Length: 98
Image (tube, rainbow, N blue to C red; front, top):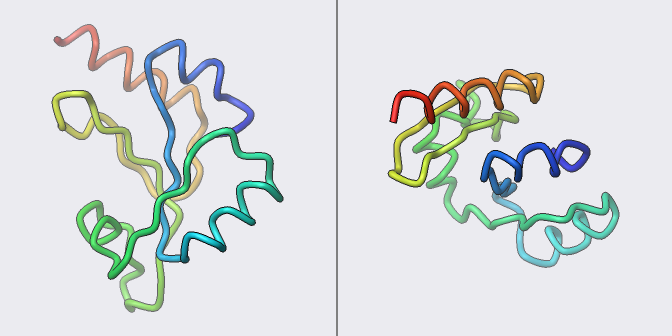
């Protein structure tokens, strides 16, 4: 995400990282990795559960990319680290449908 931020913002995508770590661990991780976007605390895994990012065995969170439109509709959702062009194409297609 960090390396594709300019392209993402061109399509009005504002990335956010979400995980169950505490605020201090997020701050340190952002600084260490030079992330120019926010990392949000997911206390109780509420967000991860809502978007299907909890591992099947419940042992943690699987990295996932979810794009939610301004209307609250999920435009793109995929586990792992999909190619940014796939994410951008999904956003373009959603814009064309609107």
